[in-house]
Structure formats: structure tokens, C-alpha cells
Amino acid sequence: MKQVCIQGLGFVGAAMAVAVASARTSAGKACYQVIGVDQDTAEGRRRIEALNRGDFPFPTTDAYLQAELQRAIHQKNLLGTKEEHVYETADVVVIDIAQDIEFDQEQPEFDLTNLENAFISVARRVPSGSLILVETTVPPGTCERVLTPLLNKELMKRGLMEDAVHLAHSFERVMPGDKYLNSITNFWRVYAGATEEAADICEGFLNTFIDVDRFPLTRLDSMTASETTKVMENTYRAVNIAFIDEWTKYAEAIGVDLYEILDAIRIRPTHSNIRFPGIGVGGYCLTKDPAFAPASVRQFFNDPSLKFPFSDLARKINNEMPSHSAERVVDLLGGSVTNKRILVLGVSYRPNVGDTRYSPIAALVDSLEKKNARATVYDPLVEYWQERQMPVHQSLPSADLFDAVIFAVPHEEILKLDLYAWLAGAKPAILDAANCLSRAKRQKCRRAGVLVESLGRGEGL
Ligand SMILES: NC(=O)c1ccc[n+]([C@@H]2O[C@H](COP(=O)([O-])OP(=O)(O)OC[C@H]3O[C@@H](n4cnc5c(N)ncnc54)[C@H](O)[C@@H]3O)[C@@H](O)[C@H]2O)c1
Image (tube, rainbow, N blue to C red; front, side, top):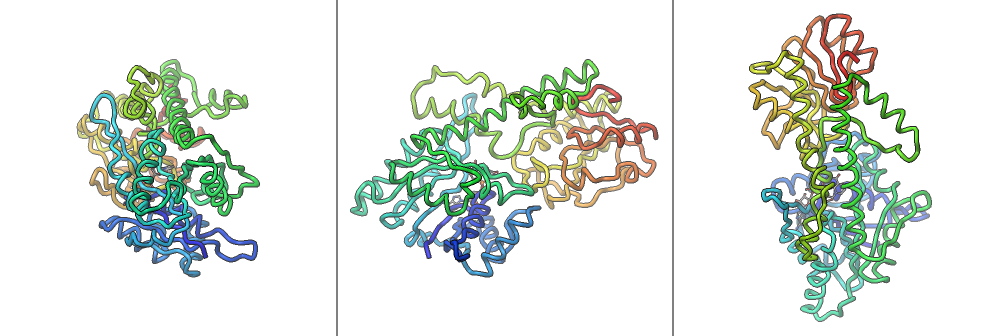
């Protein structure tokens, strides 16, 4: 059986390992022996051990992902390890480690040292004829300008020809949530190879675990084009979200319901993906990817004159968005939140996932605490808020303990909440910042004397 190694068992790599392990031949046999590799750190070991037990390393609501993981563990075609020597027998190595960008300086810069070291650990071991597939989101130019020369250098040291190992790039569009696994196996993919042969091998590999009849692959001319596709599509999304911020404030100022307006606009096929109001942008990707092209043009292509006003402004606006929700709560509580007890419902960066990295809720809570409010957080999918070192309630505390409640993330549990029953006569001010409350729910509570307002809706709507 062919062997596929996945380097990095994070949100992408762990799901990718399950996706590849679930590939079947027409006779129903597993196509691959999959080995997930992570680092010998406390978190790396936790991820490896979880996978080997058949537990997905991150909280997930995707039952299909969990079932496929257990099937793979039962059939023994998926294994986690910290041992890098497994690359020596790999047919394919998929690189799924993270690549950050430093935001400390005015013009964000990336440092590729970790990625280079991780790549070298593969390049120095993989056998002749194998494929290294980079899925990490990288500054455009990384595969051609940095990884290709590194690969050639390692191959030369080993006395192998330059094209002995194939290199390709194909980014993930994985979406943690209910359709986590399907977002890999039943979704469109873009790819490119260092050579035509590398692109062909990459295509052959992707064909085995993606339903390409329904979701055809797109081959691009170069790995730089594939890298650019990823950062451009995420930048587009970030700009779209930032655009809605000014209309959110406008709708509130003139007393209209922006959701109703957006539904009317979305009917037009050309406008169907316009975003909705929200607390802000979160997650590992949308917060950093818009900075990759501006940084790469300076660091790789030596053209500091090229400007990215939309991308830069979108990042700035998106970073500031959470403070608007905090301001709305200040208004609801009569101009001050000092010593007010505020319950925030949801802390993860998107609905139905437990991932709190780069969650905009952190900026919301910071903003409230800077105004001397006392914030409590609830999230059914998060046990502990690592980034803020803060305990998280996994069951709803009693409503009468709070002066205000912010509906921040539309998790299933939060959408299903019987608000009126939970309030049980308590009257905290309520801000629905994530379109969690239907008009009927809002009106029922208002009739009982509860102050309920929404982001993107004028007062009383
Ligand atoms: N999270 C998403 O939803 C998403 C979606 C699409 C694309 N991406 C991109 O995919 C990439 C990975 O993201 P992620 O969220 O999985 O990151 P992550 O930080 O959750 O996981 C990365 C893993 O790589 C491991 N690692 C680092 N160096 C290693 C090495 N030398 N050998 C073995 N393991 C090593 C780390 O220990 C960690 O477990 C990023 O480029 C990200 O931008 C993420």
C-alpha cells in the first residue's frame, strides 16, 4: 500500500490525514497507509496521542469525520508519530504546518525559518520519485523562490538529480464545523506543480480522495499562481467583511434592518456572497492572509512601490470591529459599563467550532475590560480559553447574575436557546451581535420589559 505522510497535525493536517485515510479503491480497500507527523512538544504529543486513540484532536461537531477516523484506526491505516524517519518510505508528504506573519512593525513581515527547517527535514529523507505537496498558506513566491532551491540543494547533497523528488502546491479550503471532512473531500481544489510531471502526480493523488467528478480540480500554470489564489480569495473575503462594517453602523444610525436589506441584495446572483454584520473577523487565515501579498512583494519581488490599500484598510477595519459591539453595550447600559457584569455567549471564531485562535471575541472582551466591565464567557465547545487564560462556562449561567448579555457566536446551542425561559424574569440588556435572535424572540422579550438590540439593526427592530 502507498504511504502518505502528513507533516503537522493541526486543524488542517489532522483532518487531511483522515481524508486521505478514507480514500478507497474501487474494490473498497484503503488506498493509503497514512502517517501523521507532529513535533515532540506537549501539544504535538497530545495531538498524536488523540489521533492514535481515534479521538479527533480538536472539538468537532462533524460526526462523519469522527466515524472515518475511527474506521481508519480500526483498520490500522492511520497512525500518528513524532518520528521523522517515516518520511524515508513515503510516496507523498503533505506539508500542513503553520506559517505566521509578524504584525509588530508597520509593514508586516514573514520569517520562513520554521517552514524551511520543516521542509528540509522532509527533503533530506524522502525517496526518489516521491511527491512533496505543500498545503500551507504561504507568501506567494515561497515554493519557487525558497523551497525549490532548498529541495535541489538537499537532493544534490544526496547525489540525486534535481527532479528526483516532485514538488507541488495545493492549498486547503477546509472549513472546521459540521462539514469539516466534506470540505476537503467534496470541494473544489486548485493545484500546480514545479514541473508538468509534478502537477500530473499531484493531480493523480488529489483524484484519489476528492470527488473530482462533482468538484473538478483546477490546474494553474505555476506554484506562485496557486499560492496567490489562496491569499487573494481570503483577502477578498476580508475586504467583503470590512465593507459591511460601515453599512452596519449606517443601518443602526438611520434605523433600518441591514439583514433585511442584505437578503434583498443577495437575491441577485452577482451579489449573492455579500457578507452580514458581525463582531469582527477571526480565525487563523482571514486575519493574516491579507498581509501575505504586500509582504511578499517587498520580501521576494523587491517592489516596495506596489501598494495594497484595500487589503491594508480591510485588516485595519476588521481589527477595530469588535470595539463597536462593546460601544453598543455601553450605550445599552446608559453610558458606562464600569463594574457591570457582562455575559458573552460564544468565544470561538466561527459557529460550531471550538477554535479560539484569533477570535474577534478576544478583542471584544479586551474592549469591555478596558472599560472596567466584568466579563464572563460561555461556550459549549470550549473548555478553557487558552489565548486569554480564562475559564469558560460550558453550561449557561443564570441570567439574573448579569447586567448585559452579548450574543456573540451563532453556535447551534446558542441559536436553539429558549431566551424567554432562560431569562426567567431577569432583565439584563441584550445585544444580539450575531443574528441569533429571531424577530419573534426579540419582541417577546421586549414585551416583558427587556432591552434587546441587534448589531446592524436600528433601535427596536
Ligand atoms: N485552520 C484552517 O481552517 C485553515 C484553512 C485553510 C488553510 N489553512 C492553512 O493551513 C496551514 C496549517 O494551519 P493549521 O490551522 O492546521 O495550523 P496549526 O497551528 O493548528 O497546526 C500546525 C501543526 O504543525 C505542527 N508542526 C510544526 N512544525 C512541524 C514539524 N517540523 N514537523 C511536524 N509538525 C510540525 C505543529 O506542532 C502544529 O500541530 C496554515 O498555513 C493555514 O493558514 C488553515
